[in-house]
Image (cartoon, rainbow, N blue to C red; front, side, top):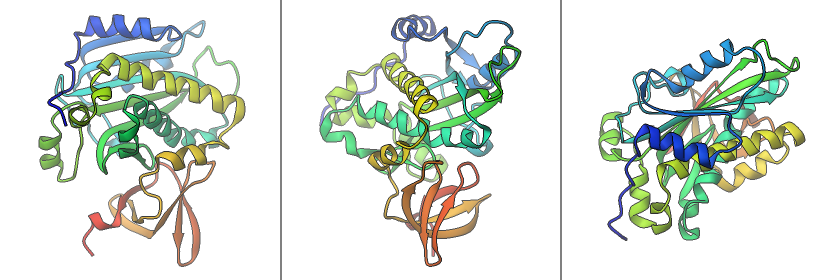
Length: 292
């Protein structure tokens, strides 16, 4: 155990400069003090973009006034306590495969963050389907994936723009746990236990994840999603656990989590057999979190 805390967020112009250097394949990189929503900003830009393609893009903000999570939920944040950014990528996939991006980018982000930890701590960082990043079963980060058709510069019928937004708790886990009434983790917790994690500054964390997304999206475009179930198994927070499946806060199914298929669907073992749960239609919580 050490007394380390999370390094402070650099000023927006410093973040922009550091990330521009760290992400040479990104065509637009910007970090601002405040905005409504980085996902919404990049979505509007993607839909308005004319002419030659110039992606990927990255936009981060110290504060998001109306940051959003999955299911339209708001993302609680204060300047300096959260690392919040979005990326826009060109993807070439049939529409039915777009939902698979949600667990894919979650796995890629979890793998990237594990790479910033010492080997002894990596298994404490896991992913809860479809893409929540957890530290010791407490939520550390959330991801929102949105897609839109590429605009006038569309190269083919299966050309879309994927907007991927992520919020990582740097501090404030205790206050968030109390206000949300569930366990929340932050990066400062990790740095107090892991010297290697402490050496990773905000720009390095952001660049590591953005690069992992870029590489993973290129890989599935070229080779498909066949490797996703095995990658997910290495970071899976739910496998073997009894879980409740909720839709609009209503219990619709219960069973044993059994990994995912190549569509990114959660596999649930029930008395009636194995059932595949679609990304974006349900949320999953370990059964022990709910009263019987």
